[in-house]
Amino acid sequence: MRDKRLAIVMLMLMTTFIGFGIIIPVLPELIKEASPDRVEFHTGWMLSLYSLVSFIISPVWGSLSDRIGRRPVIMAGVLGFAASFLLFGVADGSLPLMYASRVLGGLFSGAVTSVIVAYVADITPPDQRTKGMGLVGMSIGLGFTIGPGFGGLLSLVSKNTPFFAAAGLALITFLLAVTKLTESLEPDRRRASHERKPSRWTAFTGPLKYLYMLALFVSLSLAGLEATLQLFGIQRFNVTPLQVGIMFLVCGLVGALIQGGVVRRRIRKGQEPGYIAAGLLISAAGFLLLLTSHSLATATVYLAIFGVGNALIRPCVTSLITQKTTVGQGVASGLSSSMDSLGRIFGPLIGTSLLSIGLPLPYAAGGALSLAALLFLFRFRSLDRASGSSAETAAVSEQRL
Image (cartoon, rainbow, N blue to C red):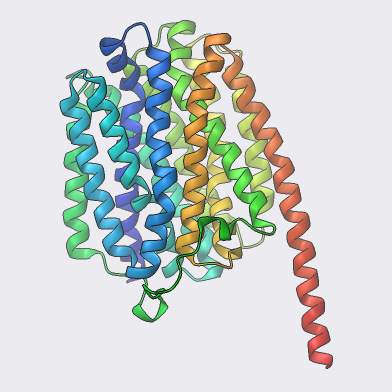
């Protein structure tokens, strides 16, 4: 039964990230048609606006799911996503409608991503949590793999076609979930409606706050890469939307293989920090290698190296947060999603601004952020070990008494 529920929510999560990935290779081209003189400006702000709305609303969805259950919130999110894809498809070069679509997508993104993470945490025991989060990462990786390639390929029909396809796919997933998805949070485990709603920042405490900051740095660097890669490629080797889709296809495929193979099968509870450190170093190497790229082939290889590192980091961080949190899984996951959104708010703006100053700057900054995130990891491990030792000493003293 648990495997069946995991399969359904993984499919829903993959569909969501297919839709997210679809926009990457075609967005600059659509903006160029609507505003040829301000492509970088609108690219940065359109990506950031989606994440700003998601940042504001994600903890609300997470808290609501703690109160009424995960299933209705997830279902609402999938329908909202379908509507946002449809709106972008009919925008047809209208900047106001394109921005409205991004607002709508951001509004419902937290209802899918953060609540599905909480759903997986509900149905997996602690010793299997990392494997469950590996499946989450693999689904995101597969969606991100298929999405840009899907968008680049369908852009050969028209630049609006990918969005209609994504809307249809989301609706099919919704219909499947209506009949197959069951609730993961039993009524006796829900927070009563009259109870005071905890702030998202109740999860930002103790050693975990350093993991949240690490996740923020990772999100900043990834969002800056997504926002600038096509613009970088156009100037370096005249890349097309289809080629950008292929690049992300390779990167996502490599990441999904790592998450499905290494993360799910090899990482045991307690090993996550070591793999996070390795992931940060590999990501930094990928960024710095991109600085030297002057061809589609080398850029694809270096992007895949970055993908390996990113695939090791994200599920391990998520797993540690769900293991160590002392608040509701919905609130913890909501804050995690919000930190990701916060990085996606500023990442595109910083990335496109740096690109306008100098072509290599976004990737130099991405490498620096990856290395700086190691400091947060070391601080987390130090405090977590200290708190664990204190708790063990207190337990021994209590037994003696």
